[in-house]
Length: 114
Length: 114
Image (cartoon, rainbow over all chains, first blue to last red; front, side, top):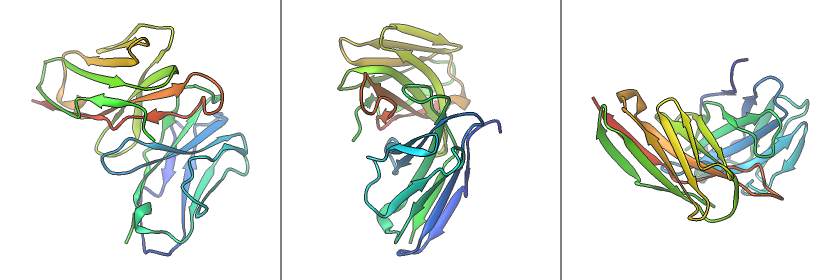
């Protein structure tokens, strides 16, 4: 595809529920990143994939958050037992190689936990 | 944690005027990137400047980098109403672990009045 795509664009869920957010990177990009952006703030790093493996998951806030990229392309960010504080914009980005390459962002998924 | 600090937090100008936004950061960098975000959606990459570069141009955009002062500026010349957006600087650390993580500031909200 032409750019990074993310689905859904909006997700409303209830506290305690499980959610999955999907990211389709630019074709051929080996590196994929997830960021989280709270209202009025800049995005904050969550996790970085190089190929199929999570090269750095140090930004995940706690063990309720998990991400996979099983075939080295599409990635899913999974959040268990959602809390109201998880409400934010979740942004995915990809880059050709990683390691200080330009990162291209998707449109984001706005998650609202009621 | 956020490394960059944009200044000002908000800027309102008339169409046709120039807009200047500044960014300061704390640690040594490999490169610094500027992004635009419309209405809380995805980030659009504008320009990347490497630590050994001092100035870069792209269309109506001019970015400067002063590594001795750990600061950068983004100049938008002849602004248009369509430039209304939030602008973020993001840094990539110089080397070692995390040399792919973008660390964003809180952004400058630019309003261009027709």
